[in-house]
Image (cartoon, rainbow, N blue to C red; front, side, top):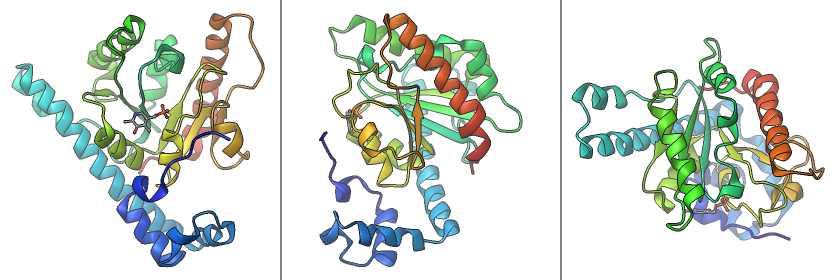
Length: 264
Ligand SMILES: *Cc1c(COP(=O)(O)O)cnc(C)c1O
């Protein structure tokens, strides 16, 4: 058994209203009752999707404000600040990654193949955008290096407005991202992750998990409630493991997730 999260704290207000309407006003009192939760299947697809889009729009505004405030503080050119107010689109499939940037969490797994990443994000028919947020421990140089790597990439022409790094990661940032992104990404190097509770927080607002089978995910994943990256085999070296998991994640995104989940 891994750690759990407090559903009432993390579910978005609009989602809780849906639970009240379709499960019942007492949904919180029966939080472990599977038969109660089965009532969520009565939520009409359109109503669920519309609710998700409200949360997604709120999250995008929040991220734009965060990015623009940083640019203003850093005296960036006014054209760039204006451009930043238009970063991210509601109609684009949005992946979120917000965690401590401990190296084992591998925030940079997708950055291992920059060309493939660019093709994924700049796909003209089905583009993708990724929102990163997180802090590294002050003594964790490699973790800080990953933040810098993502920040530098976010400024490059082909990634501008498609990869963004939100600063001042805290519970408020985490809450907005968890409630608003389409896909929640979790890429720890097995078997290092104790739980990875943020995936549970995303799930209670309807977020779709795409995760390595580590921490809480092997307990929760049933083959149809999200996506599993890689396999549970053990590798001889971390380099091989990172390469295999990275390729598996790209395959999953390109062949399954991007074709079946529409952005907006
Ligand atoms: C949930 C949460 C975490 C834990 O995230 P995991 O990487 O999933 O373990 C860390 N920081 C904040 C602010 C959180 O809300």
